[in-house]
Amino acid sequence: MKDINILFVGGMFPKEMEEEIISKSRNNVQLAANNFQWDLINGFDEVLSSPVTIMNKMFIGSYPKNYKDWVIKETEFSHVTNAVDTNLGFVNITILKQLLHPFREKKIIRRWLQTHPANNAVFIYSLDIRFVRISRYIKQISPKTPIVISVMDLPEHIMKSKERNIAVRIWKKYITNKVYRGLKLIDGCMIVAENQIKRISKKDSDCVLVEALTNPKSRKYEPIREKDRKRVVYAGTLARQYNILNLVHAFMQLSNVDIELDICGDGDTKEEIIKASKNDPRINYLGVLGKDEVVSLMKEAWVLVNPRKKGQDFTGFSFPSKTIDYLLSGRPVICQKLEAIPNEYDEHLIYFENSVDDADLSRKLNEVLNYDLDKANSVGRKNYLFAANEKCSKKQIDKILQLIERKRKELE
Image 1 (cartoon, rainbow, N blue to C red):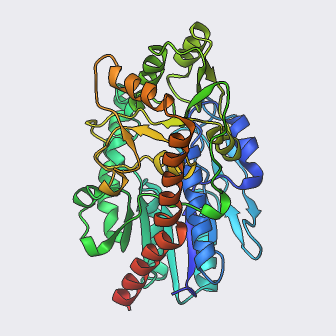
Image 2: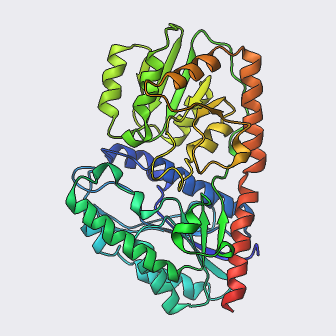
């Protein structure tokens, strides 16, 4: 099983281009998706005899509103020694980027299948419309090649903030119908929430649950150091539907002068957060940070918070990737018990309940900020060990490879 050759079809940022991509992006940089893909890629490389081959179409905003370039040029790169990877070129204009295929996409797929005619598999990141085209082409050339896709979010839950636009609603309906019809081309699914099985109409044996994975070698546990000011940290998308403003309001209810709230990321609440930071000097908006900068920021935290609330139509069908990243940081973590969070997380997460005035979140913040240093470090170390041992990439990637092996045998 370790000798299998995998083509990873993704939308991550090549390491050497990450700073450039962030600087050229104007809204909603897909850092969570980027980080999760790299965790998958690094996990595959750790387990397999040879590195995956990446065929990549970057998940970036469209020109001119959300990205500076209207054409993305194709580049070759090597994410590790002996890897042969391609960053596809494409027209980066709204709608056109969906309708026009990336340059040389089919040629690269065909070349890879010819180079790896047997003992191969394709892993596609994200259930978006492009997988239908790619999967159909692969099955035409090599029908016995297993195709596994990661179901991170369901198509009906994308672009939630833009649904008032009738054109967006029409486009979403078209995408959703095409995606669900196209799932017949897929042999297996990596799901992040059990409820997803009901929506994607797959058998349990076609799916494997991998809600998160970690690379503990890349991040050692570091205890909280005694400091004058205790820091609350949120790192992620600043979307209104994720209730980031609830965190801001809950924090502002606290009277402590020796605390700070650090927020990094981008989204439709950014201007309101900046305004709040001017009214309350304890709030710091830090902009969009790269992964290494975010890791450093979380090491400075006393507590990490995800204010996303349960009961929304998407919370039962997606697992917030920041949850495992927070736990791996070795800090106390406050969040709600979202519907897609498995019960094994209950002894590691500090849950708050819904309240109209954010009073419960404010109480939980106050409670954790009043931990003594020993208790805060005890909670944080327990979180780190859970994330590092139970959700490590080797264990999680083995689940995916076992699914691939089952599907390979079925296709023979």
